[in-house]
Image (cartoon, rainbow, N blue to C red):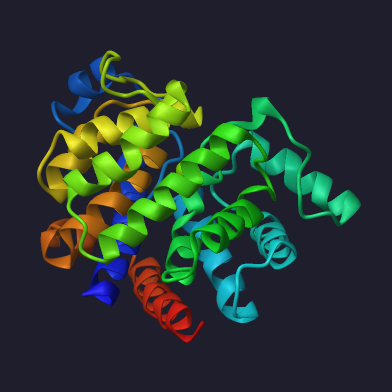
Length: 294
Ligand SMILES: [Mg+2]
């Protein structure tokens, strides 16, 4: 079950990314006018993607996962080098904070960015999945340290760290069979209690969420906890627009991990870029196998 759910989480990441990218930076009103409800993998969007093509959320995760598998563990320098190589290959999309701090890494060779409360974008949280899989079964402290090592290459901020760690623990508990309700009470509410910025219940529906990690998680949590299957969760979150590829990617991770492979709509899976699908499946399997060895 664990490996199946890990694969579903990785496919969920890619599917949410590809589905959301079509409507990235649009408002809910614009989406409704153009698509009614956006629910098909049709590509397009401001990046002019092919149907089923993914963006940085998925390709940075795969770059990180590859570095973890090569090193046999999460290593900050290896992650920085992997991201640097990823940037040199001219990805279709790259976030501002990611670019700025990778350029800094090229100059200094230091894989840890300077601390900044302004670097609380969602760029580290969107790629946390391979770390969650590779550290499955490790101590809480080890999981937190691994989350931070990968995150701080580009995003060193308290709120980004809190989001990354919360997501990693949610994924790991889902792999153990935790229900959505378990995840709500054990992880989402405690995150909002510790960092009230993340409160997602007493606030208005987060429509048109920005790239701020707080906006992202509010939208993801509202969609994830208020729907009951993979398809509804992803449709709900991407139709909010804004940073829809990343809200889609993170919601896809959680929904995949909780609902499993059977819940992923065949049409979306078929439309997903074939090489990306294979890479996601292969990495999920290999990362869980690596976790079992430690
Ligand atoms: Mg993206």
